[in-house]
Length: 382
Image 1 (cartoon, helix red, strand yellow):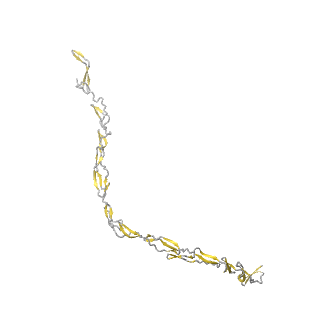
Image 2 (cartoon, rainbow, N blue to C red):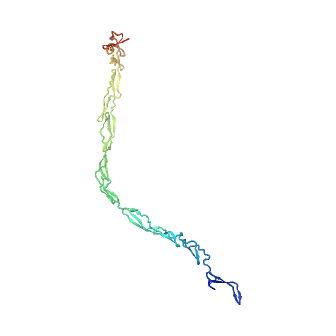
């Protein structure tokens, strides 16, 4: 019997000549006969599913060969190499391979304090525990101050200290320290530019003067011919000169019997006496300082009447009344161009009534109205 044949005996045999004889059947073994068991070797892949690939980098379904599952590599598979320090993990011939994380983005420099600057190394290392980049740190001392972009340079570089805060009270040239110019104080007189201060002097870098005192007002004067101007005792300075508020007082002596009160050299004077003559001979004229002119009527006594033809009169209750029955002279219009005076007598109203027959003239050749002017005659016939 060959190695590729398996012989199977029937369990019940026949006794022949004292020996049991069993019938048998030879089976051809595709994979050979097992010398130990005498049976055909079984297919080692029998019952194997081959659906458990070793990693995501293999196709999920494999093939069994000689009892072992074989899987084809899947380079398009999605995988993770479980390494925090790699990125973009991908399959390469069944292996999960990641690109190492490159730590080349250090944090920005920062100022630990005013003079210490902390700078990270340009290249760092990945921490496998966290997957984060860690950079070594270097510290720099900044003499003139720290800035994140770099140490501040000497602030006095290129600085010229030649502009003192107050030219009169500081030295013209200063000293730079940390970018700030300092100037020495100067003592002595100065000019603060204010015309209303006196004794200007430098005091702690400032030009300070004493305020001008205005307490000597000018004497009173005349603001107008009839107005007295008086100045206040306290004034104020303007443009270096004292100015004093003033009050105008009208000159009035409160005496109604004077008029034209006036101001002279800052003093009010009474004017001349008021003329209380009212031109009426029948009043007694006087002046009361409080009330002014008074005109007291007079009765009795002669007076000149305002009537032109009968001027002789007598005062009565302040009026001049013409005396009646006194002869008078009246004017009479003798012709168109001439007047003649004729005798008359005064009435109580002061009218001169003609008592003399006035001269007449006639035109011997005129039958009508005769008008004459000097030697010229004019006849208006009826």
